[in-house]
Length: 299
Image (cartoon, one colour):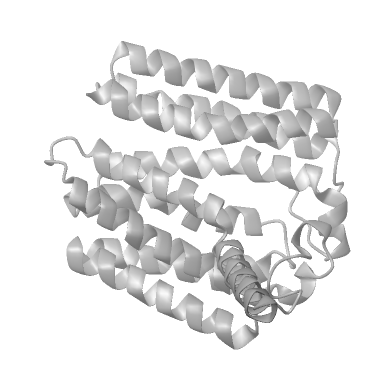
């Protein structure tokens, strides 16, 4: 009896660990944020009748494609993940999961996601999702160890989700789609560079340099955050001048942009890990606040 209970308990633990490993392979929290921005893009296409069923399908398709991108990223980086403290416990570096299993999971989820977005929405959405997956996994990922320009390359697939969501609803890549893309594109620089500042020593172990200046954690790198936050503030106000968003939504967007820029200026002034961490957490808050303000401000 005791042995049976022990075996049962062990089986439950194995299943829990396997589920945890797949969540880690997919980077679920990151994938959720990506899907959130895609759904915002879909809902922002206000002239199209919103279908909750389609919102759910978009979320599933987007989650599958994003999970595949993250899985391939970890397959390619499995050796350097062993070198960094924050990634040492991932399923591939610890060998809790073998490479073939991860590749099969990535292939199955990626292909399924692209098919779902193509079949239920339109071929343009499918093509954009494929571009996002391939450019992130096979261009951005290996480029990270070569040049800090990888951040610019990675910002492209990172900015595609709201455009993909919008295209799912409309089938068109128009001015609004480009505007949604541009906002998320510019946001990624202070977001990634603040992370790269905090994780500088850890990245250095793996030979990764993502800060924009070869000088590393200096004002030459910090000033780039200020420049991109300023550009982001300008671009984020374009919807107001084109009457896409009302005064209340635009006020929220402007306030968020000013606060985000102030965080970047504080980091430039002090060049400390503490201010970089504030900027990083600010970036996590900024994007959903602005995207929700865009959506609510249009209703």
